[in-house]
Every structure is written in C-alpha cells, then in structure tokens.
Image (cartoon, rainbow, N blue to C red; front, side):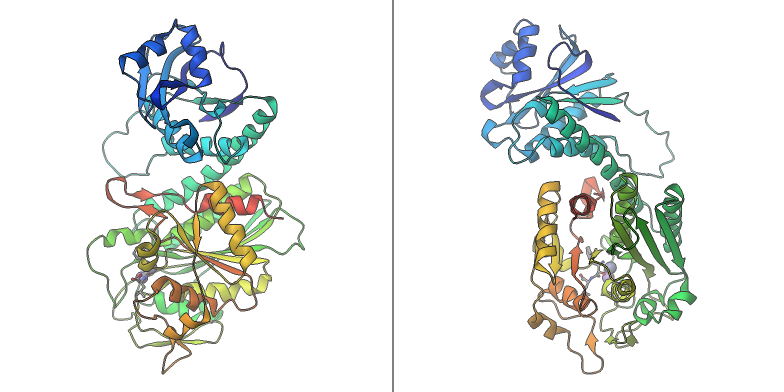
Length: 494
Ligand code: BES
Ligand code: MN
Ligand code: ZN
C-alpha cells in the first residue's frame, strides 16, 4: 500500500475519509469539518444513537456529500485516554471496514488528534504497521482460488503542520522498511516445517544477500564445516534428524569497516519434537515456530538493508531440527561445546540453548559492541509473561534499558528479568561442567543463565520470544515480533 502524510483537512478528495468520534458523541476536529460539509449528517447520526464513540466501533456512510465519497466514522474511546494503542486499534478497525468497500484511496484524519505519549514520527510508523497488518496474507497452501485482494491501494494520513508532515513521512518510510522485514519473519514462521527447513532458511539468507549485493554478505556452513568449528553442542541437537543442519552467517555493512558490529543470534529449530524427551502431541504443530528467532534475524537484516541503516551488523543462525531417532542424543549424553565447556544433556527438549551456546561462542571473532540473541526458548517464559512482553535477560544494564526503551517506543515490549548467579546453581552437574536444564522453577531464568556462561566479557542480551513470536487459536500465525523492537534499537543506536 502506498502511504503518504498530508496537511490538508477538508477539500482533499478521497474515496473514503476516516474520521473519529470520542465517547459521548464528542466529534474529533476533522469530524466537525465533515459534519459541516454534510449539513450536520454526523450530528444527526449521533443523536439517533447510531454512533457510540466506543473504541474501534465503526459506521460506514456511503454517498456522503462533500469531498469524500464515503466516510468511516470510528470510535476513539475516551479523549483523555487516546494514546498510541488506541490509535492503532481505531485505525485497524477503520481500515478493516474501508477494505470491504470499493475505495482505492483512503484518507485518515485520526492522526490529527492529540495522541498521548508519542509524536508524528511514531504515528507514521504505527500507521505503516497497521497498514501492513491489514494487507498481510498468510502464505497458505489452500487449493481453492485465492480471494481477489481489496482495491485499497493508497492511504493518506492528515497531520497538523508541515513539521509534523515531514516527521510522519519519515515514520511511514521507516515503518514500510520495518514491516517489510516483519512480513518475511511472519512468512517463515507460518510456512510448514516440511518446507521451512534449515536449507530453506539458508536459501532465504542467500536471496537476501543477492537482493542487497553491495551491503549484505552471507556464508552458509554445512555439517562438515560445523564439525570443523567443534560445535559439539549444536551437532548433538541435529543428531536425530535427516534434514542437514546449517550455520548461516550474515554480515551487513552500512558503516565504516572498522566500526564493531552489533551481533544478532537467532534460534533456528525448524521443528522441535523435543527429541528423545519427546513432547506431548497437543499443539506440537506449533513447534514449527521454533525458528522464529532465526526468522527475526532475517527480518531485521532485510529491514536494516532496505533502510540503509548506518551501522554494521552480524547475524548468526544455527539451524536444524530436533528429532528422536536411533541416532538421536539421549538424556545423560555429555557433549562438548565450541567453548570447550562440557554439557550433560539431561533433557533433549532443552535444545535451543544447545545450538545457541555454540553460535554465541562463534560471534566472539567479530568483537561485537553488543550481542543480542533471540529465541523461542522456554515455555516458562510464556507462563511468566504471556504474550504481551518478550522476556529480556542481560548482563549489561545500559543495553537492557536501551532495549526496554526501544520496545516501549515501538509498541513491542520486553520485560527485564533477573539473571543472577544464584540461579545458575540449578544447572550444576555431577558429570559435566553444567547440565542443560535446571528444573521447573525459574525455567526461563535458568535457560538464560545457561547462555550467560558463553558470553562472558561480551555485552549480551537475550530475548525469550516464546510467548510473543506467534499467536495460537483462531488467529494462529506469526506476529513479526520482536522486529519492531530491534529495529527501533538499531535506528536509535549511536
Ligand atoms: N521451543 C521450546 C520452548 C517453547 C515451548 C516455546 C512452548 C513456546 C511454547 C523449547 O525448546 C523447550 O522445549 N523448552 C523446554 C525446556 C525445558 C525442557 C527445560 C520447555 O520450556 O518446556
Ligand atoms: Mn525444546
Ligand atoms: Zn525449542
């Protein structure tokens, strides 16, 4: 969808105007103008009780008299509470209604309202995210004919002044780049695990590098090369699978070559059965999403390259399946990680940390400014935070608060959790340097403590996205999170 910011209020010709009404029939400023244009039609509808002003309620007026062929009236809720979330919800509801009409060009006036705790730039970015959400199609494999896409091609958002217009324009452009990355992240997550294999992720990385030839480089390593790197922990996870594993290394150069990079490490388990510690059957299909950390790294690289961010990035993706078989790793097996530390695998379902630890050791060669790993790591994190916040674990307070703030601004939150030394006691083993599990209590934290043993001397953060990367139930599908958080961090990185 084409996105623009404009300063015009009335007389701007459009197929559909989106205007807001607050609770108690309080008209927004644009609604007042349209009310006048239409000979008090809006006021009459409110008096009749057709418009409640409840957040997200919509009413479509066709054959509107004036500059817009149609008007979508959308409820904005209480005027004092109108903020970023409310803006998102109202615009989303309005565009869902617009989408069902024949409108090719819609103009939203919601962006002229006072939106608490944000600015024109973020209004632009949020708008682009909502537009992308409305147009996103799951790459489904249904054999029926695809429904014809809605005619809506262009969305203009009205803002008050020319300064706001250029800020909103910038937000829209950044939003377009970010949502381009999010769509890739979502697509990869949504694909079935027989298609989205480690090889498929590697091919996707190669395609990305081809599309951004000058700035992006990729190297894909196979099992023999992974063995040469002595990644015994990573290899223990792929041992039961017939799909060959891959180690994908991406480099993005947007800054001088001597600027140390930020490293992103993504968990790429393309299917997690649990291995010999096999998972129960219920909802096991959702373990196709266990590569969403990897998909996030690919989405961020796509977005960063398309926006030409002036930074350097390294992305490392260890990817394989976790399967049971005669050759699979068994509970009690001891493996040696690339760092030299030995691990007693007490539960083969705690496999994410086993592939990540070797990838974290690998990024040391880049002397990164910061390392951020992204992983659908623990069910315990979902129990702790649900699907609102990603879990955030870090050994560096500045990095942690930079990520918290980026999440707040981007509307893609992460909540800080402790990684204190005391919790690491739960990982003690009689037979190896550590066990790969630390019992039921504080499961998300002990998983982070395990990773912390491999990043000493580096500034590190870990995002546990087990609750945020996808939705279950009727709306089952990838969310594209935490691409907005990470992009916000990278855009504001100094
Ligand atoms: N991929 C799962 C984590 C997961 C589970 C994410 C459910 C989203 C929903 C991970 O590999 C896993 O199985 N973790 C185990 C760890 C346990 C064995 C210590 C878990 O969370 O149960
Ligand atoms: Mn698992
Ligand atoms: Zn897993």
